[in-house]
Amino acid sequence: AQSVTQPDIHITVSEGASLELRCNYSYGATPYLFWYVQSPGQGLQLLLKYFSGDTLVQGIKGFEAEFKRSQSSFNLRKPSVHWSDAAEYFCAVVGVRQLTFGSGTQLTVLP
Amino acid sequence: DGGITQSPKYLFRKEGQNVTLSCEQNLNHDAMYWYRQDPGQGLRLIYYSQIVNDFQKGDIAEGYSVSREKKESFPLTVTSAQKNPTAFYLCASSIEGRPVPKTYEQYFGPGTRLTVT
Image 1: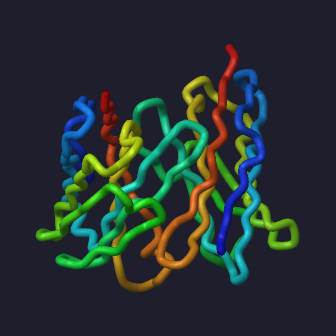
Image 2: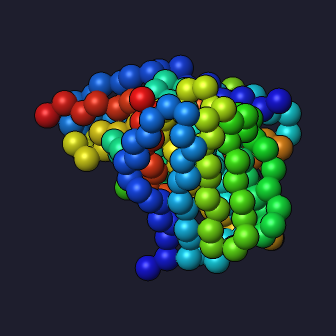
């Protein structure tokens, strides 16, 4: 069965610093992968997705993610974090007719 | 603007009462989903529906029921049989068809926070 691991429960970065959120997946075939962001008390917004092709995927709000099959990873990156990026981030992989979500990484941004 | 609406945003109920959460979408999406979110546990799938008048159990369907009488509506009832109903509930939808990966691109509503005491 498919699974997603987000090893970091909570990450704190300073505004303007670079960011990398880790995501490891377990799935037998070529995975379809997603990153979502959730602001407090809100629904989830799709940041970016990987279906096939170029392994470096660009998303909204200046985010990008790189699919590395050899490492079963799909890490999310941003070169310079803004205070408005403070939120919870979820990685997800498509399994059998449904998405499987990781447990999330809470991002705190220091001024 | 197209989107998904969930109402109410906050809901309070006494233990032993059934409660129905509303989810409406005007995206003309075929598939709709209900998730439960608890702190530190990510999202867990309760039910999903790919077409009107049909729905499937997800990973944690016990104590919940749904209906899909209209394409745009997918209400979730939390019954008294659900042992720990206090949670944040999220509804989502996606388009069916080709290319297949697009089917899995889900769009979420703002959520309903249910508190049962």
